[in-house]
Length: 135
Image 1 (cartoon, rainbow, N blue to C red):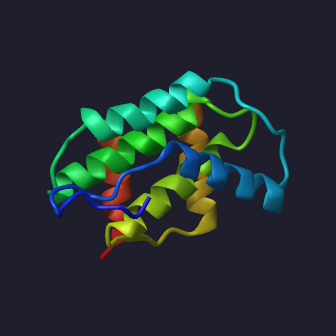
Image 2 (image 1 turned 90 degrees about the horizontal axis):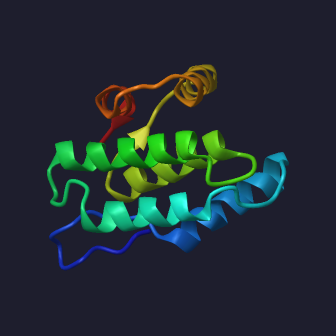
């Protein structure tokens, strides 16, 4: 992450950076190595880069962030650590675009656990992120 395309788009996610964030999380907290659905992760990156909410508005930024979080948490691309990875990738994406998530650990755990087991519309995830992000 961290690259901007001539000022017209927000920083976008990169496949290898997501995998690196995941590996760093497993090194720090433990968990099973491996991929469950490599194609889900590849599609997430492709979709964010090419189709989903292109542009630089705040709404578009949070739509992308919500999509990243929801797809990693519910798409289970990794054997273990999908909730932690989804949250950390989203947190990094928002930070590189000028926003910081300010959420207590207990609330993050509760939200991610619910997101993993319930079917939430992307608008719900986007609203949660917007409520908890500060410029």
